[in-house]
Image (cartoon, rainbow, N blue to C red; front, top):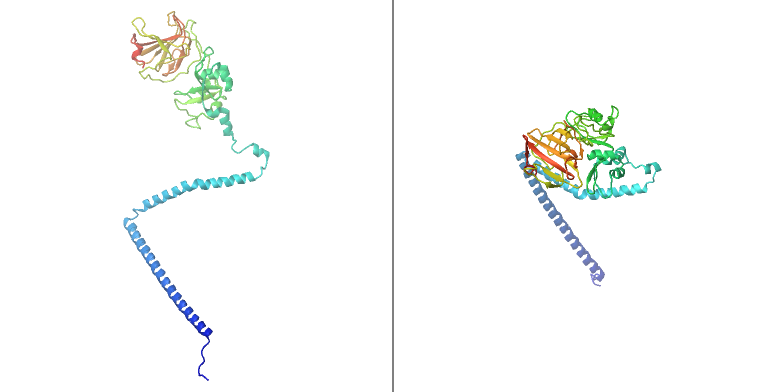
Length: 389
């Protein structure tokens, strides 16, 4: 019998497989050790570089004692603002959509709440009632009258007449522009020395009614406790009325007066003149006619060519000027405005440059509706063409 028997084939295969597995495990273990060592070395290198950079940055900031602090803060603020501008609207829109969905999903608790939304306040009522305090510019259409325009805006005709320096006899034409106040009354330009009480008295309001000026929500005051006014500001006088014109004692009774333009208070002439009326020149300056005749078929208002004091307003004699106004500008110049249909100032009154002093007419020795305009200096009649540009 043989001393040793041969190992079975299966045992040899099994031993070979175990050897191969042991070799693979050894290789894997060696690879894992390598990876760990490599990663550890790399991380240490990165951290070492970061620490070195940080130390250098700190040293620079420390040496410069905060020199670069503001730039860092500014760039940081700019970056934050950029993010808010770019991403904020998107975030807010999503939030609003969610709130709207919740509001639609929630039931209405009461009909009273549904009929009276939160935004309907007393302030909104004032804006609705007084049109926001705005003065509307109305362009007259064909067939319109002062009464129809007043009815359209819920005002009295007198309010429109007063605001636009018109009278009951004034005619309006298509294309003419009218100022429409937000409430019945008078719009007043404050002059030096005036108070709430003096203005109210001027337009027929008594002591208790003056409160309407204060209560009007769009009147502004320099001091809300003392109701101090600023010279030149406009003040709405609700329910105010312009006084009836009283004829000056020195008239012959021929003069015709309309709604008065308010006294302008302290004024100073500029030394230059504006055109006193719109229209064409029908007769110019010559040796026998030292004036300008300005004609307009639709008539229209006559304006003070410069600021000054009215020295004549009426028809004081039988001369051919008819209804006239003479203004002394206080600088050596005097202007005369003749043939008016209606006079809207009185003698002794002060007017600003551009104030309405009357309406174009055909009174006195006149061959048609026009304005006779003179400029005088030291008794001499000057050529208006040298002053009107």
